[in-house]
Amino acid sequence: MTEIDVSSFITKTNQCLEYLRKNCPDCKLIYRPHPDEKEELKVLNLRDFAIQRDGQTAEEFLWFNKNNIQSAFSVCSTSSIAGLNIGLNAYAFYKYFTGVFHGAHKIFVDKYFAGMPDSFFVKDLTSPLINNRVTPRPDSNFIEKFREILSSNSGPLWFIVVENRFLLAISALAKMAKQNFPNRPINLVISRHHRWQDEALATLQADFDQVLIFPRHFYSLQPSKLFSAWRTARRIKKLRIEPSSIFLGFAHHSFIENCFISYHPKPYKLAFLPEKTWEITFHPVQAGFDVAQLRSTGIGWFYSHLLEPLLGLQHTKFQQYSSPKPLAFIRLEHPLEELYDQVLLFKNWAGQGD
Image 1: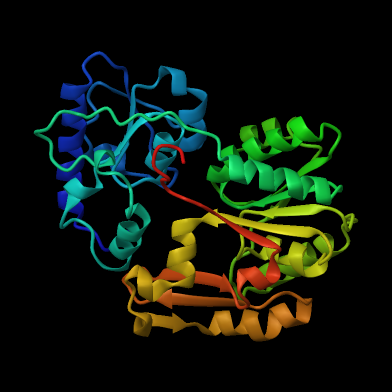
Image 2: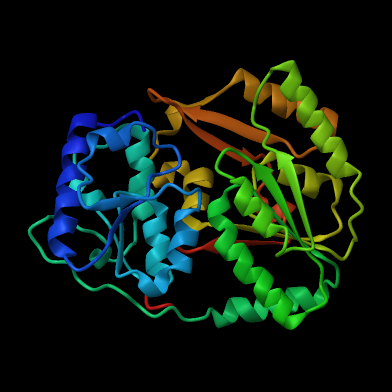
C-alpha cells in the first residue's frame, strides 16, 4: 500500500503491540507476517512475540488452531473476518489508524470492512477487549441448494482457485460433496503464484483425485509469457471433461478459469466470490471510487481485442485506478450471471451465523 503515512503506521502498530502485551498477559503472543512483508520486522517492537513465518495461510492457521486461540488481531486483514466467522474472538485495529491510509487503497479497505459489527473494531487503546466470539451456524439454504446441484449434475467437481486463502471454503465444500456422494471425483485446479508453498501443494495431492497446477498468467506483452499463456490455453482445451461436471470457480477473472469456462461450456458453472469483491469490482461508483480515474490500458486492449479472441476466450476488461501504485480492476466483459449458471457471494458477516 503506497498511499500510507509510514511513520504513523509504525508508531500505531507498536502501540497496538503494547496493547496486546498488557491485555493478553496469560497468552502466548504470536506475530505472523503477511506473505509480502520484507523489512517490516526491523521497525516493529515485537518484544515477547514469537515470530512465525511458515507459509501457511492465516485462515488455515486460525482454523487448525482454533481450539487454542483466545483472540486474533490484525490492522486490516481479511483473516480477522475469517477468524470471527469460524467462532474466534477476532478484531481489526483499522479504525484506530485514522489518518494513516489515503487514496484508492483506503476506499478499498473502507468498503471491504463496511458492515462488520462494532465489537470487531478496536478503536482506541484505553478500552478493554470485549468478547465478540459467536457460534457459527450452518447455512441450511445453501446446503440444500448445493445438494440439489450435486444431484442434478453427476460428473466430477472441478474447483478452480488462484488465492490460497479460499482453501478453507473449498475444503468445506469438498467435504460436503464427499458426505453426500462418496464416489464423486473431486479435482482441484490451481493458478499458482508465489504464496503457494510446495509443502502445502504436496498435502493437497492426498485430498483430491487430481490436482492440476498451472502457471499464473497476468497481463504481459513479453513474448515468453504470451507463449506460455498459449501453451496453458491449449493444455486446458485438450482436457477431457465430462459434460455433467461441475465447475466451482473462485477466480472469476483469472486466465485459467477463463479457459475452463470458454473451452468447456457444457458443465454446470458456479462462481464464488466475496460480496465485497463483487461490489468493488462491478459497482466501483457505489463503492466510493471516482469512475473518471479508471483508466484502460494498452495491454488490456491487446488482451481483450487480440489475444483473447485469437484463443477463443471470453473477453476481459482491465483498468487501473489512478494512484501512486495503481489499483487494478479486472473483470470479464460479460456479466457473471450470463457466463455462470449461478453466482454465489460470501458475506463478510451475516450476524449470529444467519
